[in-house]
Length: 209
Image 1 (cartoon, one colour):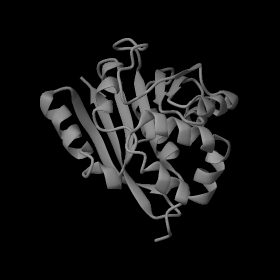
Image 2: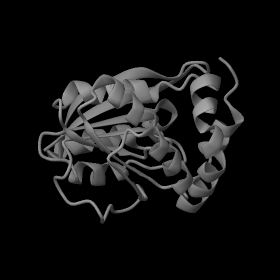
Image 3: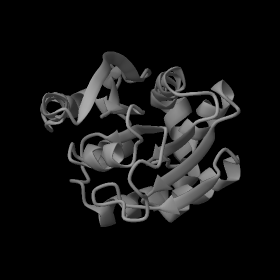
Image 4: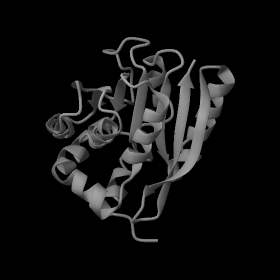
């Protein structure tokens, strides 16, 4: 197994502090795509886009939650050009790079560790979030807001890094959501995450109640 990229080591050590996360990604925005796609073989955007497209209609309105520089948006458009995609992210500098990619209808700043006040209940026909639910970033409780803004029966696609899946409570959270009837678990698959570092994730597909 290759040594993990130093920037990724810093990223997973941010302790979920929105101010530290925003500052870190503001400084990383310019080289983010190259560092992730070429240096570590980051495939979460591809596997997440595949899963979402498989579970939504051709002309669905979907949200990329924690869109970063727009890697998921590009992958979604490649698979279904008719999707309407909105994006939210904590870091303005990352959103600027998303805007240049041209995949999104609108992009807004938002903190996924708290309430998404600007988004009404039952707004979206699908939500995808890649690379957000991981060590040092957004915890399991962030899933609640994403389910709230989904229409009943709509899918939520998440990647959860292996090192966070059980240790940070994501496995327990998903099981509780299903037990409570808040969501139905459609899929949980052990999937590649950083192919050049031999790091894996859980690809999770939930269906809003």
